[in-house]
Amino acid sequence: MISIQGKGVSTGVALGPLYFYQRAKSSISRTTVKDTQAEWERFKAAQAKAVEQLGELAEKARVEAGDSAAFLFETHQMMAEDLDYEEAIQGLIQDDKLNAEAAVSDTAAQFADMFANMDDPYMQARSADVKDVSSRIIGILTGAVQGGIDSPVPVILIADDLAPSETVQLDKSKILGFVTEGGSGSSHTAILARTMGIPAIIGVGKQVKAEYAGREVIIDGTKGEVIIDADEATRNLMVSKMEELKKQREMLELLKGKPNKTKDGHTIRIYCNIGSPDDVAPVLGNDAGGIGLFRSEFLYLNCDDYPTEDYQFEAYKKVLSDMEGREVVIRTLDIGADKQIDYFDLPKEENPAMGNRALRICLNRPEIFRTQLRALYRASAFGKLSIMFPMVTSVWEVKEAKKMCERVKAELTAEGKAFSNDVELGIMIETPAAAVMSDRLAKEVDFFSCGTNDLTQYTLACDRQNADLGRFFNPHHPAVLRLLKLVCDNAHKNGIWVGICGELGADLSLTETFLSIGIDELSVSPRAVLPLRQKVRDTNVAVCRERVLSELMSDINTI
Ligand code: PEP
Ligand code: MG
Image (cartoon, helix red, strand yellow):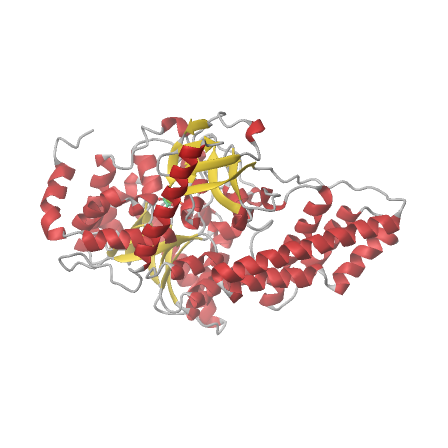
């Protein structure tokens, strides 16, 4: 038995084979083939395998998230077998003697272009689908692994760390838990694990050796422990812990439909953070009241080129319609720093966390911002939308962003396109400057949402991505908590609501603090909704408020 200690960043216990993440090969070789019939058969076998994989994914999605989730995979199945698509590939293999992977790649590019140039937004959105299906077939042909996991059974995935663009591509149905060599609690692998409700352990360094691949591993996300080839007693203990956690989860299920009301009658809104329109199913499944943060940059990360207005409109419309009138806060593009996208062609920066990112990019490149705002306002006709701007530091930035919203609304009105007049505008409070200036900023917007991941990073001048800074990156630091109190006070003095959408919102050891300082909304990963509801219902603000506030401001708490 080998036991390795890391840092648990998403709770739960999982047991399964250890699998090393494989980065997909991006280059496709182009060769001339002699035996075109054999090459055609090679394509047909890969196509059949792709159809089979998609069928399995559709069934899994149907069980987990219903018919609409399965529909995507079924559409991909149909595309893989589409006669025009197949004929184009056959022509390139048999007439031009091109190897199968290059023939699929060329056909994918041709079809994707054709779809992208159609007028109908639905057909335009198929462009991404045809690329997706084709890369699955190419992956099978080249032996490169679609989504990094080539295993018939779900696995515990180990990687050095995963970039946001890699996490969006993972076949989530194949992952029981994550282990990463580096990373941090607020890295996107950790956030993804919490969204999926599976355990994750970071910072194990090089202790998990390549020769352990395929061996049975147990991970305990609460303790941060990775156990390989557990002895019988340990294995039994962990299996009973898994069963215990399952029972606790069943108890929490009983809280569905119950209000988030404290013992003394304070009600708080509990919303969810999502990264894709597909994440709505777990939001509803966990009975959240709304979406407090849709990280829209994941749409951009998922594309090879700037997503069009119609493509974005479809995605936002889907989330808003699926949420059936519940509030959805969509954050405008937040790239830069750890979320880099090649096609933005941004110059390399010495200090990207403090560089050209988020709202700064949008204000510097208004055409990109305008496209997103047009898509958002058009989608607002389909539900209860709020728009939120990230990485604000100054009042003028908010004024400029609001002007852009007015311009977009005027354009849509002139074009006779529908949008809601009820869209709330808010900002993220994630820089110390925004927190300190929150009295002034509150006069400009309808709400604040505190991004405690970045607020901690900037307040403590401590890189949230750097695993070596673990004990310095302390979101409980009184400097962070006092800023949150200041933000709440300023929001309420100006009659606006304030929430938390950073990872700290789900930290149950701070729920009393958040309720005591007057936080109105907490936006957390779907799996955290019911434990948080339980904690809120167990709290009595009238009893704890004085103690919590005096601790917050006292000398004992000055670390
Ligand atoms: C935050 O900074 O707390 C936040 C919610 O945004 P992100 O983690 O996407 O930077
Ligand atoms: Mg942030």
